[in-house]
Image (cartoon, rainbow over all chains, first blue to last red; front, side, top):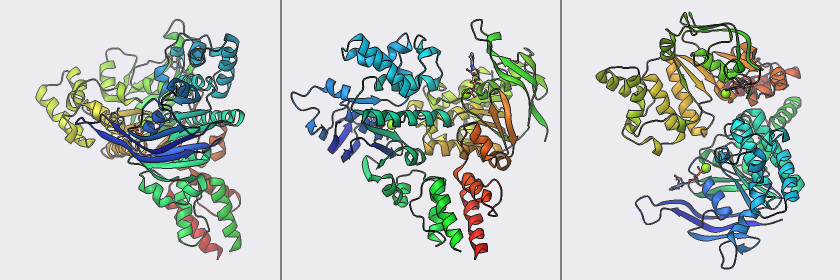
Length: 284
Length: 284
Ligand SMILES: Nc1ncnc2c1ncn2[C@@H]1O[C@H](COP(=O)(O)OP(=O)(O)O)[C@@H](O)[C@H]1O
Ligand SMILES: Nc1ncnc2c1ncn2[C@@H]1O[C@H](COP(=O)(O)OP(=O)(O)O)[C@@H](O)[C@H]1O
Ligand SMILES: [Mg+2]
Ligand SMILES: [Mg+2]
């Protein structure tokens, strides 16, 4: 297990040019081990910038990124090792497949880690099963696959590195409901069996309600609020302020609560709403 | 209202198109007619045949068996295909793949130029089209500087400039964030108000609920077909084929099942709050 922390991190794109843009300003986040943390925010709020800082792809303008307490850019620390330990699945990763076969694409990361061939094969098969890539596809060209299948291959490629921490930038964007659920469930299973830490980037509060343990809400390069899913859904006004849509069920239960009909602040699942409403109706 | 697109016992098999394709009917003996000026949502998960259907609607594909007519014109008649495609425009999923020019207005002018429309008329159409998607102020911008939602609106303007009678949106909001989706949906609703026939393929049930009619595809056939309330009230059936239902529809469905009096097929937050308030009143 590894612990990842952002400490007063700011990031400026194209500094000292007319295009200078401060994407993050003084952000501090402690990612809890063995949990799924959702980073949520409107487009442009800085989510992808955070993702790239976490595995050393970008270097913070000020502040530090700490992996197990050690600054990843400290003298003597090897950033390429950081990338093996903190795996990053980019947004729309299906556009970045390039090997001739699916197997080789998934094996690309572990091959770079100079593992022995049996271990690489074991990892490819294991990662493929979590990501939902059928072994029948191993010898196919990635270009023959559907968009959803390609996405899974890209995710498997990062899982095959067996990183301590995996960061996924909008892994379900554009998928159908079934594809979305399969990918999120695969990620959850992977976390459970590897005791790893997962960081999920999304702009859907509904998905986060179902799959995250903790949530960080970002706006304009800052953390607006954070906490467990239950805690964050208690602050519906703050979520709205961030420009995100709250789930339908949350809007309905908030309104009924405001009118004194139920006791239901911070509800985000249909199960819970149903239970609360039934309870209140029976009391009448 | 009169029939605009009509499919009669249509079967489509990709292997008939490509020599190495496997024998597989993507569309199976399907009949459907779409009225002029209607707003039809098509839902169903990946591989159910939605995109194939869309391509049959505007003659990009012609049926292996059966007949497709657009405003009475048979799409398999090569002399008419130009006319068919001009009347039925299509907006795709990835905003980046649809932009061809270096400024927004050139991009919108591209399609009418290809149709051989006169320059003065093109000017007029481009201005109008950009106005109707609320992108006039961006006309001299480079498309690469735009957000996803803005790019899609430019793509829609390009189609509008061809003055079609029908626009098909094939998951055109899938890659957008909630803000971008809202922008595009508003644009679609406006087009519909002005009499355009709209066909919206989507995975977002909160988009589909705005249509006059929802067609559910499954395995190349129509599984359900009706107005949104009729279709979404069949919660179990939708679940069986692993599709989402709106959260409030699910909640109302469960309460109805327990014997509470609620209207069938609630779809929107406001009406659900209203219906639940009445239920609480009655309970007193
Ligand atoms: N390569 C870049 N150059 C300049 N500005 C950038 C670059 N990448 C992102 N930005 C800007 O930084 C801010 C945060 O972007 P990003 O981290 O991509 O946000 P998100 O992932 O939440 O959409 C935005 O204002 C964006 O325009
Ligand atoms: N170019 C193609 N060649 C062969 N099969 C195809 C092609 N395009 C789609 N298919 C197959 O046709 C079926 C329907 O696909 P499609 O219409 O794209 O569904 P949807 O848009 O609902 O995801 C699927 O089984 C798919 O694999
Ligand atoms: Mg991003
Ligand atoms: Mg499709």
